Amino acid sequence: MNEIFNQRRKAWYSQNIKYLRYVFNDHFVLFLMILFGAIVVQYVNFLQNHQLNTFGKVILIIFATGLSQVFGHLATFVEPADKVFLLVKELEVRKYLLSCLVRSLFFPALISGIIVLIVTPLLEFPVYLLILWFVLLVLVKAGWLGQKLRKMQMNNNLDWSSLIALEQSRKTATLRFFALFTNVKGLKSRSHRRKYLDFLLPKTKRTYEYLFTRGFLRSGDYLGLTLRLLTLALLTMIFVSNGIVAIILVSVFNYLLIFQLISLREFFDYQLLTRIYPLKKTAKNGGLRAVLFRVMLFVTLIELIVGLIFLRPTWFVAVILLVDFILTKFYVRMRLKNKK
Image (cartoon, rainbow, N blue to C red; front, side, top):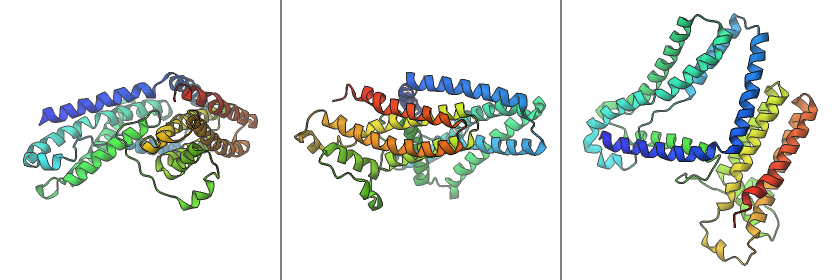
């Protein structure tokens, strides 16, 4: 039993390591280094000037505690076929699930430790209180995961359907993160018509421009991703007081957006008829560039309006315009250069 799940665990970790190579590519690592440096500088300046009273410390503790509980899910590596083939081994599966609970605490414990270390200079608590707080964070997470596991073992029977659904949801969430940076195999997506967006479909004879626009509007992945990253960029400009940090974060979000939208090029590859269209070889890349230009134009205009209101100094919006221009004009061409 343990051997089966160990093989699945190794295969999953191996797959994640493969995708991590695409996540931490040269461009993104450069962005992260700049972002990390900016955050460290701002945090040091904040520590030198902050005046956190008792109420502020309580709010900080509540926020840090809640944040620590967001990370980490119960990883069981159960697959749909197990409810048939492992049904007779249910007792052994239960023992295995207990070990899963312990393993699933490693990552949230690490995150909790990092959070405690970050807020330590602000709280100025004794070491023993910080250690006690860290232990309590891990115990709360263990209780939450344990409660989930108990719900799936009611009446001395495993709820296989819930167990499988929970694991599929965990894996899908991880793969969707990797999908921000590269194409991910096995990630299912659904498309449906949104009639209220039909007016955005171009009246054009350029086949791929129409197809890619329709795919963008009707795919929950691409449209949802655009709205989420745009929202994060707007919230950054509104709530991050330091203009330099805000610009860096907005640039990162826009880079992630254009990086992921480039995969729209393969959206209709499953349609064999597209391969026999009487079109030039450059039509596909040209259609995608036209769609990405319109999407980034919309994003840039919204960011420009919000930036003029909230960014200080306001001329920082020119940096956003420059970054978006470079991404749309040069980065997209570079990425599509070798694709035919």
